[in-house]
Length: 443
Image (tube, rainbow, N blue to C red; front, side, top):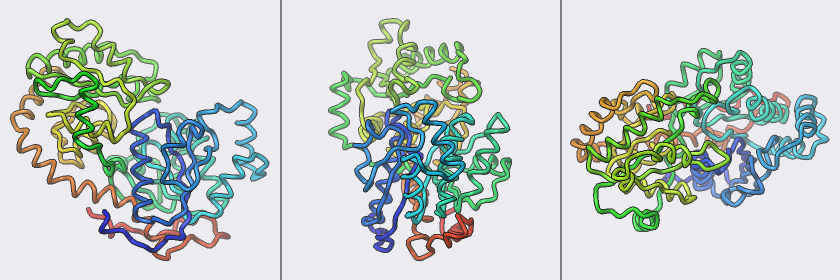
């Protein structure tokens, strides 16, 4: 990527919004990779970021020139009155609310407003979509700034209001990139007319911690490196479809995870290292891992190592890269393992994971979280282990293509930098503001 550095666009002003909380390491990996890639490509660009927990997460975003609070931050939590004032400011354009005025002014001065990659444009549920997609898009459009939704997954939505808000927001964009091809079907169902291209998740560009640092951390966590090391991330299935089953307790899934842990340790003669990608108040991987491990026999538990420290995404990726094999129940640990050339099997029901595994040429190693059988998964694990040497080489061969696809998320920004500047402010954020780049992205 260093060879591709370009020097034009150094006076560019960029706004990056929808940066999620740093307590979820996958979301943090997206933001850090995106900001790092932009800064490397455009070292003198002026970048303003709007984040959800400015007083807690500000230190993460040193690649930004300015870090400010999003319109509806998670912390400090807004009172109902302030939320109403902010909403009215967005709707009527009377920017008597200082945060709304600040966001509007940043968009007015910006050459491009970028929505950081990840899932649905504003989050799950229509309230989040209103606060985190509809409101900022409305202000950016009113300010005349072109809008870019980068590296999205767009999942099917259950309610008419969620579908309508998402479709409206995406139709205001000058360009959209999707981090996996399966989301294109959802865009068509929503009636989105904006040009889009399929790229890849920003987090593919994340640099891992070095092997020495990663092994040192694992030893501090008690991993003895005396047997083969398999890695796993354990995610509560209630986080798989937040709109549909956030309150549903899935006992069969929990039981399946217990059986899977027992079988991997027993059948594969391996130690199992459990990684967490979140901590309270996010969906708590640690708590679910404790539920899985709690009543397992002592002879099994002595081969389980829960990585409990609060580590950076780069450190987590470095540690996962030390495993012989990996089992992923979240997207980003699966990305970390595969981009470290570790043979990986995924157990998940979101399109984003299935889509990434297809992109990585690993779709045969993806199973549904709701319908998997232990015998089927163990058969795949044994085959993967037998083929691990050739699979490691296959994954190494894929790295350049994955990096190229993720780097393609920069192309709409390059179009702005090359002189395809923002539309006439009087015209608002016309979709024609950024020429189509479909021919520029590797298929």
